[in-house]
Structure formats: C-alpha cells, structure tokens
Image 1 (cartoon, helix red, strand yellow):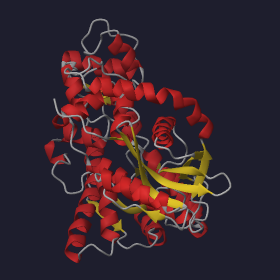
Image 2 (tube, helix red, strand yellow):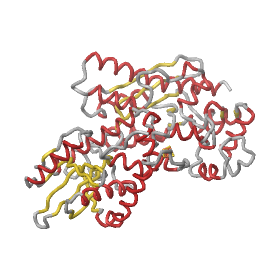
Image 3 (cartoon, protein in one colour):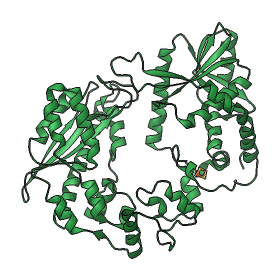
Length: 492
Ligand code: SF4
C-alpha cells in the first residue's frame, strides 16, 4: 500500500465518484493504469485552451499560475489574493478535509460580498456528469470558508459563429442543482477515504461506469480479472446496453448456449465465431455493385473541429475539411489515377479545397466513401458556405455509394472482432499490407493533430515536411484501401 497523500485533488476524487476501485487503484496501484493516449492528451490540451480563452471574457483577474502539482504554493497565493481584495481570480486553490480543488474563475460581488464560481467546460451544453464535479468543487470552496453567491457552468455556445466570438461562452446557473447535492458530498468523501485506507482492493464488479462518460484507465486490468474473453458479447455490433444485461446474466462468451435475443447481424457474428468460417453473400454483393457507375471516384476527407471556431460561419466543434484524397477508376481493367489536396496554412481551407474537390470528383460516376454520411454532410456544409459552388457541390450528393453497409450486410470474418471500420476490414480481407500499423499518421485523430502542427508558425520546416508527407500518405492509403476493397468485392 502506498501512503495516502495529504491532499487529494478534485480530479482524483472524481475517480472515487466513478468507482471506489478506481480511486483505490489510482492511489495504491498506479502502475496498472493505461498510459495517457494522444487522444486523451489532446482533450486535456483542448480543455486548457478553452479555459484560457474563457479568462478573456472575465477580464481583469489575477492568474495563479503555480503548476498543477504545487498545492501548497497555489493555496498560499490564493490566500494572499483573497486577503488583498482581488475581485477576479483565475485558478484559485482551496482545500478542506484533505480535498483540494482549483476554480477556473471566481468573481467577487461587491453587493453581496460573496463570490461567483465560473467553472469552464469545453462542451456545448451542461452534461450530467459535470454536476458532481462542480458540486464537489463548490463544497470544498464553501467549506474552506469562501462565501458563495452563485455557481455557474460556463460552456461553449453552440449558437456562436465565427468571426463574431462575442457570444462564445454561455453561463448556466447551476446553484440550485449543486445545493441539492451539497449534503451528499461529505458522505461520499468519507466513503472514498475509508476505502483507500483499507488494505485490500475493493471488490467492485465492472459496469457501465468503466466506459462512461469515458473509458477508465484501469479497464484492461479489471476486465482481465473478470476473464472477459478477447472477443465477447461486448464486441457484438450495435449491442448497446444489452451487453450489460447479458453480462449480469453471466453470459460473456459468444459460444454460450444461453446467448439469445440477438439481431441478424449479431447472430451472424456468433455463427462465424462458433464455426470459424467467413460469411459472404456473393449474390448480394453483385446486385449492389451492379448499381454503381464507372468512373468510380473513391473519396475521403480529413477534417478539423476546433473548440474555438476559427473559420467564417463555423461554430464550436464544426467539422471543416482540410484534406482529401480521391482515387479515380475509370472502368474495369483500366488504370487508377490519384488526386489529392492538403491545406497547409492557418487560413480557411475551404476556398481552395472546394474547386479542387469538384475537379477531382468530375461530373459523372459513383463517388465511393466509407461511411458516406460523413462526407455527404461535409459537402452540404461546403455548399452552404459557398453559394457560388453550391449547385455543383449538391449535385455530388446523389452520386455517393457506401461500401460500409455493403460489407456489413454481406461479409463477416472473425478477425473483424465485431468492427466494420476500414482499419479492421481491410487487413482481414486484403492482407497485412493494408494495415495502418506503424504509420506516423494512422487515423483521423492523428491527422487532426498533425494538421495543427503543420499550420503552426512554431513548427520547424523540416518537421512540417515530415508531417505533410505522413498526412498525404495516410489519406491516400484510405482511398487506395477502398479501391482494393471494392475490387475484391467485384471479384467475388
Ligand atoms: S475499470 Fe471499471 S471497475 Fe475497474 S476501476 Fe475502472 S471503473 Fe472501476
């Protein structure tokens, strides 16, 4: 057992709200936690960036810039600023009963001589899980002696549109909801502390809280302990909450005789699991492909969805394409040509992307996109953005065909492990050469981070060249893989 820290941060305590085993393992077995993924780190960075942006909307404050781990320094600085009558403080620190929290923004109200808490969240609405977080925060602050007037969640405003960022944030008064939770905080903190003082790991089953609102870092450890097989009911496609019903009935393996109530697709996966054979419906493949028209244009977008809008007409998290790859296959037994576009500067990618896209798509033939709904939605948005190209862009929509539902309805292989993503399907059906393993940019999230680095003035030129090449290689691979997948289907 490790020593229990003198102060536990709100972030750690919220793990105890999620699950008592989670806080226990965090304190006593941190080595069992999965490393932070680049995706999670990007979310942290985004939260910090939105927090810093929010300060501009509550100006005139003093920032307590002590590092997150400097509890003592941040507490001392907060005491000093409060004693000096500072009316707005960013990142003020408070502690009570071993619980430590920092408030994004606090604002003094001279009329009431009380403080408003403004907790900034990089979401576009108040989410249920934020109430516990803000409730604990307010409890620590109130108990440490700060008189509170109002508790607000400040979230990104989905109505905001660039370039007018005057309404970027929306304040929601959650004082009533937090007051209702106030009395439940102390018992919860007592429960957390009594748990982490025990010599043994609490015996807590896995549950929905392992995966929601995000995946717990101890999932691998806990699920291994429960001997969940590598492919289990949790991998059944579109199983949703039925997976937990099955789990609580003691059914986890796909060859469990009591496994029932599945839809056609799930039944197919179970049959393949039991027989070890691939399912393929060649007649259905043929009939769907017969409706696709050459030339086939295989299209894939990469997009960026900044929390703080940066392009005309865009709101928080609006998807903007900055890159595409398009392979063109004119007719069976003819060569395949390639077209690509990558915006590499910080200005709006759309004015140059749209003409290049229209040129690459041409005027005839089917446009093949894996999960075409995404590409079609982006094209509709591009049409709304550029009235001059609107007609031409909207004409593309009727030409889309989608290999994803086709594969899902006609092919299943155990190696898919319940997933029909291109990254699961392609290496299984086409071979390992079509795997994305080892690529510098290997998925859409990588591409987004690479784009941010590519357009940053702080990135050295040599790094930009490396990123550019990796991004082009990745997007090209996506459409090339689609070409080979469709060829494979024509050959069945
Ligand atoms: S994986 Fe689930 S059971 Fe394990 S610590 Fe996390 S939330 Fe608790």
